[in-house]
Length: 136
Length: 201
Image 1 (tube, each protein chain N blue to C red):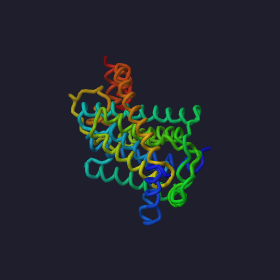
Image 2 (cartoon, rainbow over the protein chains, first blue to last red):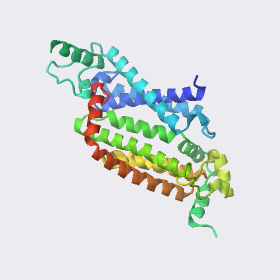
Image 3 (cartoon, rainbow over the protein chains, first blue to last red):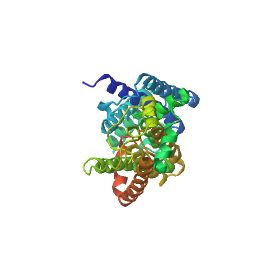
Image 4 (spheres, each protein chain N blue to C red):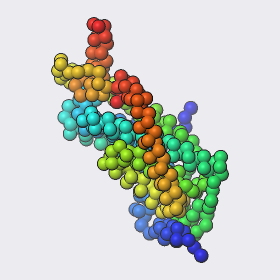
């Protein structure tokens, strides 16, 4: 069972990565990954999540002591775990929020990885890909 | 006779305790978490946050190079310090009074070898790894590496020479890792192909 500092660190990574994904989705114009339709709202949302998480962690954590449970390799492992969980949650939430929202044109090329998410949500892109495979 | 390196360290650590705000800022910057987390989040942002696919791919190559170099630089410093027991001098706070006071105010007393600075090696390796692919994108990484390095000297846990040694190892590692990635371009392209299937690239 991870201790409370490890959990706090994991929460820091999860929250801040979620904020970064929202900012990056707005910058990259990935409508299928955004929580809001208006880019400015999405920027604010991402920035708020990022800042709140960072200020919560760094005001709470004792930075003047050594955290032996969180050395370099552990930090790396928890960073991967936290950022991957945040990505999955981002995929899931944005797909639910934009269930009917994102207007994708029928002619859009699919199969370009994250580029597909400019016009579709992850769920829509997966469904499109599966449908296409069955038709072939 | 005090070396110029030690003199510079004494002068910088002598600044600690004068302005509480600066001490708090240095605590944040020197900490084991702030700069590593900010650097990793910056890399994450570069991975996804570009509209143009060609530019994004260049950034993703840069992120890959930076992460690879960061890991290898860490490994080199660990090999030097642990199996090879390379530990040429004690940390500043073990020798100088001003550094002892600074570390009490800003940081804690680490007891692993001081030279070369592990963090400087890792952060400069990441910055150089990114710079070789996309010089503009490497600016925030270099900024974070420099801020962290100064904060560690301010805190009295590293001499400037520790930082320079770490940065040199980092720069060299960044360059070598860039070359290795160029040689293995085809295999890396396969990784990108797989990542695209999962909407990760």
